[in-house]
Image (cartoon, rainbow, N blue to C red; front, top):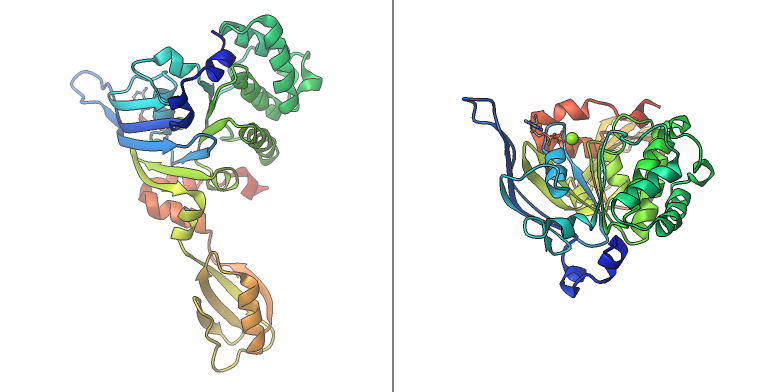
Length: 339
Ligand SMILES: Nc1ncnc2c1ncn2[C@@H]1O[C@H](COP(=O)(O)OP(=O)(O)O)[C@@H](O)[C@H]1O
Ligand SMILES: [Mg+2]
């Protein structure tokens, strides 16, 4: 049975079941003799809705790859259960696997093959007839902006093109769930943007996407929902927006034209402090309209000349949630902040 017919003949329960459901997942890697082993996952539960674009965010060593490895059957779980669109991984492993496409972090295709051959051969391995595979390869290469490069030697592709080829290859089996493990770790911002575009298109066309990342901004710009994992535990999960609102306030420093009046206006929901006679420190709910704040200040005769953000709220949230363990990853400045 081809993945296409598999998807269309899936039982109705699988249409409404979560794309991924993980219950109390535990994994302890075997230790060397006399050593009791490394606990990598300590009871992880999460659900990803069909159609979602979901981020699993966490610092290095948090357990992201272990979780992805278990879901994609590369790593054996110690305890717990996993189901994919209602298909239990332990009981119906092959059926569950047919629903998943995996993009590993490392480039792992043959650099001496042509993109179109890489895609068609991959699909062939999963039982897709050649004619159908050629048709799909055209669709996927076009979506990955690689159609012009279909027949060049893959090693001549740019870094970004190679990464998009990895995505196109995973899409050849028409997975309902696409999983990417740190797809953009260590790649520059141009390449990341190109991948984000391709991923957004894939998601818009109906494929559920889960990606792991330790780039906060990546999760924010791509994902609707996320879980933050740290030291083998989910420390936070929910809609991206709700999570950001949790931090609820963001702070700005406003430079004022002239000098501030002796008494500052009261603006509902905000805290205003004059740090000197021409600088205002304002804390306000993230959701609050800045124009309203400017208007209220204007009514009080205060003109704002310029403003600065006091801190990176996402970074702050991340550090707060994951403690000192997060230092490793948050101190690695993402390439876009370098550029
Ligand atoms: N094959 C393995 N054998 C032993 N320990 C491992 C293995 N893979 C990962 N670990 C350990 O499990 C923990 C989680 O690792 P991993 O899932 O790779 O985290 P992440 O992908 O979030 O960086 C780490 O402490 C790591 O050292
Ligand atoms: Mg990893």
